Length: 84
Image 1: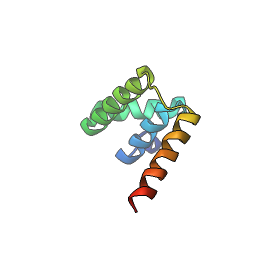
Image 2 (image 1 turned 45 degrees about the vertical axis):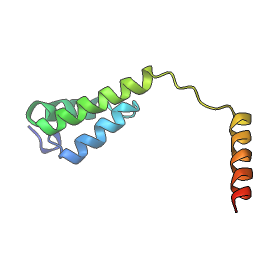
Image 3 (image 1 turned 135 degrees about the horizontal axis):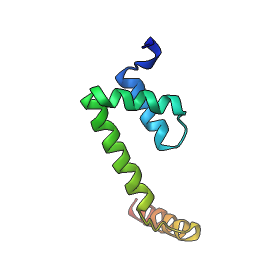
Image 4 (image 1 turned 180 degrees about the vertical axis):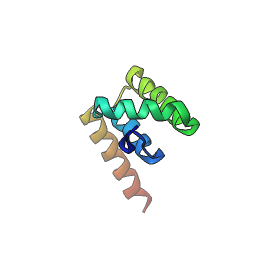
């Protein structure tokens, strides 16, 4: 096996993060999976990262609209001005 087939733990974590955003290449994914075979820390990191990615994808976030945020910001500034 070539030396480039083996990667460090930090490289594996970086590839895992890239994989989360679909930025990793097929070769990087192969190297990551090979490292997962023999490294428990990498397996744990990949597992947690996968769960986090799925949780974010399936979450239904309800964010403030722009005008609601501006109204809230204005109220906060007014309240802070009155306290001083």
